[in-house]
Amino acid sequence: MRKKIVAGNWKMNTLPKEGVELAKGVAAGRGEVCDSVEIIVCPPFTHIAQVVEAVEGKNVAVGAQDCATEVKGAYTGEISAEMIAALGCKYVILGHSERRQYYGETSESLNKKMARAYENNLMPIYCVGENLEEREAGRHFEVCKQQIEEVVFNLTAEQFAKLVIAYEPVWAIGTGKTATAEQAEEIHAYIREVLRSKFGAAAEQCPILYGGSCKPSNAGEIFSKENVDGGLIGGAALKAEDFLAIGKAF
Ligand code: PEP
Image (cartoon, rainbow, N blue to C red):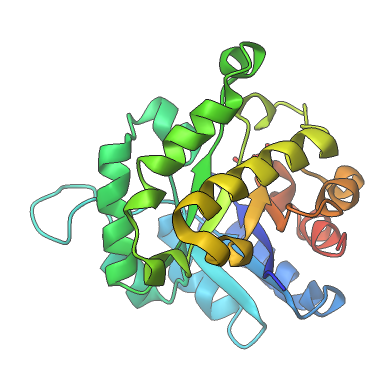
């Protein structure tokens, strides 16, 4: 049985006080979601420590939204994987399309970030997905394959066993447009096939999350698909009630 996961990517939203309130709301309702579903919140760096404290002992994991390529030193403004891990994070989102698009994230930088994450026992949530133009040109399979081959294929079997993948079609992120459950299943199954070609049977254990305007009203249908193991949630993760309702969709 693959792990089921619902992860909230708060992006650059919430001030510390609001973030703590949101985290407390998630922790308070966590019991309504099946224990076997991993619930993760990913706040901005500035209040990770307070959020970790707010959810302590409540079966809610905390993740960061990114980490530095380098270990430590003269990299002004950067936050290392070691710092994140020291605050109590278990996960780190890497390769989110907003970072690829606005901050020039490449497979080269992502290979370094993945290495830093594993060195610090952080589980990466590695994001892949095509933009609208690529989808319309029917190139979504090849785009996802390339993003996986250039980064995930460099992992050892031991590292791969700790990886979570998020398929996030860029055209569905924050747009209100959602991939249909069939579109999600089609590409999730394809991603698993690509993973199987490199890692064999271990691919069956890798959680593949869907992300892109996932909300309480559509999560149930999307999560019912065989190769969809949960969601990476943006907008709807900013309200504890909606986020938990998505968790309950399993
Ligand atoms: C995301 O950014 O990871 C995301 C899925 O955002 P939204 O749910 O708002 O589309």
